[in-house]
Amino acid sequence: MIRTNRVLDYLVAALLGAVVFALSPLGLLLTKGYAGLNHRAVAMTLALDVFLLIWIGAILTQGRRRRFFFHLILWTLPLVLLDGIEVVARSVNLAERILPVSDDSGLVNYGHLPRYFFDETRSAPATPGWRLYRRWNSDGIFVNDLGLRTAAPTSKMSGEWRVAISGGSTVWGWRVLDADTISANVQRLLQTAARKITVYNFGIEGATLEAELLTLQRFRDAYALDEVVFFTGANDVLKAYWSATTGKTNFENFIASDFELAKAARRATALMQGVNASDVDKVEREVVPRILQDNPLRRGIAAAESYCRSAELECVFALQPMLATRKHHPGREAKLAATYELLFPGMGALARAMYRDAMAAAPDGRVCDLAGIFDDQAGPLFTDHGHVDEEGNRVIAAALVPILLKTVP
Image (tube, rainbow, N blue to C red):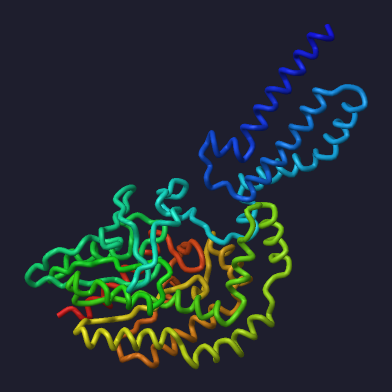
């Protein structure tokens, strides 16, 4: 009987040993190909492995040694319980429930977004220029050989008017399919125009107006463009804000850590502390006037205007809405607005001031302020501080068409 029990002990220990290896970082790499194991996964699997190894020790030993291993089991049990709580917290997105940084639930493809949007290598720096994308043609997304998310250039038809819509990730199409981008919506609205008008998407993620101009200069001749609509401003505001405040550090700290419980604790603390009124006052009194002395948006518009004149290219500018510039935040937007008020206090004031300053210095009729374009919309449209869902893109497109048509002969 004793011999049979020991055989069973050895068998159970061997099975647990196999589980330990399978759940170890090395085992996951070999069996699952998890080349992207992060610190969270490594720490959690190692904690579970240690707990199981202690059990193996308890099974294989007897007497006082076994009692020692049982004591170790009790001491390490909290680690396993913490592992379980971490798994549950991640499964319910606890940090996002406390203070969400983004909310994609309004997107048509919510829950099954194409993997392309999560590929950090989809674009790379371009010289000269800003960034360009790897060729892609799948999942409703097409990137041409030039690195733009738009149709490849073709021979120009007689009487055709070609327009590029330039901008950052909102124009590029953040987490929306090609058919739902701003440029695609504008193209559909122009189908009944008296003249044939072809619209191209010149959006590049993260582009400021300065970077947009680099992209335009690089591809203007290849596409034989007649006009460019700069749907711009948000990235210039964000970059200026981050340069003048601790906003970028606050944001990175807010989303830092692979551990859901750590992020949840950090956000719960921020929520309890609330918005610091002195931070808002400091931005409005000190930061805004300092930035306006050399407004990058004003400089960008002047540089783009100068290039357009030299290239005999029609250019208009539409200053884009941001979460911080919308007067009311219905539905799911309310929590997003609360998050960004904590992270970026005073950003709304900076955006409105930079927009007013840029418009005052620009040629009459060339710059349109669309910061309040969503104020009369009943539903939520923003998915984070600057990106919008498919309905938001349709609203933007409807506003851009009359602006675009003003310069079409």
